[in-house]
Amino acid sequence: MPVYEQQPQFHAVPDRANWRYRPRRSFRHSKALRFGTLITLLALCGLVILALVREQTGTEGFLAGLGLAVLPVPLMIAAFRWIDRVEPEPWRNLAFAFAWGACAATLMAIIANGFATEWIATRVEPSSPTEAQTWGATVIAPVVEESAKGAALLLLFVFRRRDFDGIVDGVVIAGITATGFAFTENILYLGNAFGEDQALGSSGISVTAATFFIRIVMSPFAHPLFTALTGIGFGIAALATPRQRARRVLVPLAGLLTAIVLHAVWNGSATVGGLGFIAVYGMFMVPVFGLLIWLVVWSRGSELKTVRAQLPAYVAAGWLMPPEPQALASMRARSLARSVARRHHGKDAARAVAEYESFATTLAFLRQRAHRGTAGADFVAREQELLHHLWQRKEVAQPALAHAALVTSPPRVAPQWGHGPGPQGRSPYGPGMPQPYGQGPYGQGRYGQGPYGQGHGVPPQHGPGPYGGGQGPAAPTDHRPPYGR
Image (cartoon, rainbow, N blue to C red; front, side, top):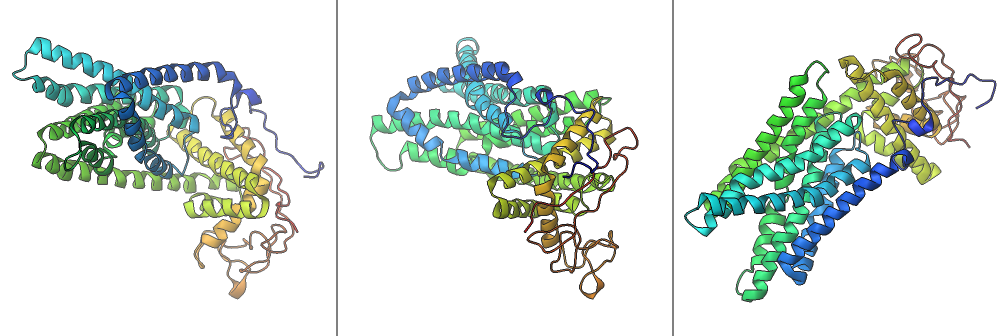
């Protein structure tokens, strides 16, 4: 950009060491000690779990259980990552959630369930040896396990509050935590089943095959489904205003209680077996799972609507180009923009576009929280920091997003932008809004020179920030996009 053109000023942006929003590949060195401590504690829990499981299953049983239990993990994680595409959770949060479920939550569950079952067997004096295990599975285990998994949600809700924006985040974090928990638990169950087969010999359907079918094929979503109810509670609490303190406490507790009840019903059906298990599976698990899918899809659509509704304020101030809210509110357009950048400029450009999309989405959610009164006192600094990150990546991202909006938009849309030049006097971007990036399928444009056609550069825009005078840096002066010839 020529030095004589106006540059935006980001007076409220903190030093780089204190950035609140960072590219996902970067590492915040100021938190290295806490991060290392957390990793060490989780690793110790993992070693203790490894020793306990190996002691119960034996080496061969452990290896067999590990090989079978790992099969659904990539599919489950990929499913939750797909759900979280609008504003992906930071990888650190997801890694912590999985490690907590696989190590810390499982260790707490094994210890607490063992003590509780032993206490029932010695104090309550059940009528048969298996009755203590039945009571432990249907009463103690749901409370202990759901509370242990819910602790990961509580920690991220308290210490990573800015990454917790709603129901989708709650479901994703809960699902990843429960996937880790189920992974370790499946190693134990499958390893024990393999040991039984080794001791009894193979006759008919093996215990290992039956356990694999029930736990891996029929119900890999069981633990994620239970904990997702707790995640929904935390997601609803994240949308509460500071005055709604009761909602922020009671709703997560209600979600946890619902998860415990459904988990108890599921464990009870497993102890009954036969038709009771099939009835609970068909009447409770499948409908609740379908309802959860509907809620997640609806919530993700609501997030995209938030992006579409909040970003036009930054278009009016000159920070974004008019097609960008439309492109950022479409998962197809986002993917196409990354593909365009990768095709013309390589992986680094595609990564820059992905970061631009993430920062713009976070900016939309921040503005929405400001409307609800939950953005916090440092709203201006956080807004300017996000605008700063967008400004650093605009040369690559804006042309790619505008091209994606052009390709994915219907041929005769955009009454909000009116009519402009193009074939038969039509433009997909509205009145006085020419073709965005040069000469293409809709006629002559003026926004740059690149693979979309010949243009004449982006017109500068000046004015106050989206929140009025003094509330943000001046609107930027734009310059030629990077897709030059």
